[in-house]
Length: 323
Ligand SMILES: [Zn+2]
Image (tube, rainbow, N blue to C red; front, top):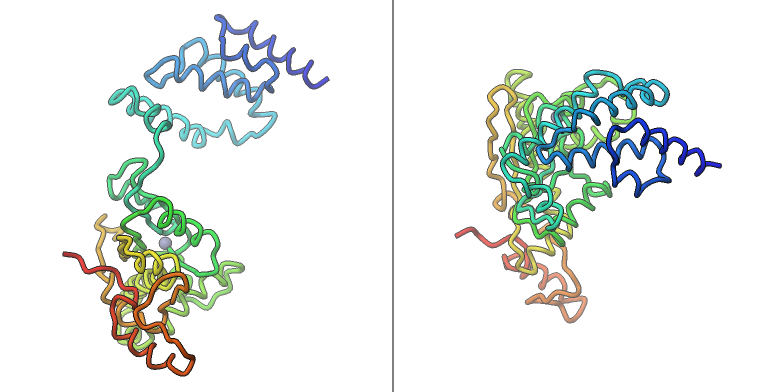
């Protein structure tokens, strides 16, 4: 029954069409909605310049209108449709510069040099701020750019970026006037997100003296944004993923940035290895499958070996110094 109905829908669409479409005939059992999507996509590639042919554009517009009101009235919203207009313009511009842009992109695997953990704030899109292109940055975003060691999402992204993509730089990018950081400075109940924001309250507790030394609320707010970036970057260094990479000689650098909404400028906090080196002895992980110079033979020798390790940079796991 369902297939019969789909065939009828398909037939009526074909009859409406002023020219035949080979692609549609291949998908005669597809649903009407899927068929229209296929049809549109096919037109986009047919035209090469990213635009839809006039005949199809009209047809898609009409069929979209029919299904929109029936399925999801939001689809007719002009602001929503602007996203697709933007996408068509994106395709058009890329193809104008390189007609093989998308086929090349689809035929090769990604090899980004950077991973970036940023805030979900809509005003801080990392690729636009850095004028980078699709394929350049592996991106993870969440409220207030946090690196929480029990967050399977950020940890999975980090593992894939470091172990598979072999990125050379992992960057935490915060931004001034961050709503998440601001909310963490309040005592108002915000619901579920308070559990997440508790991580920034920990940053406040860790750096209470520095924060209390500021004179204005704005200074305190800005400093907390920066300290939060530093702590999240250190959270990266604490992970076995980053430490294993360092221990095995993989080139990997951790950075902390703050973006200024008011100027558009990104500031490098230059935390990197020097801050990590101070706390490394506490968080250092010994990997049983990797060689260590002073592996203790007896349990009673452990303390001496540990002290020796703490004095050996190689075993502390800090990355190689830049030349
Ligand atoms: Zn933010």
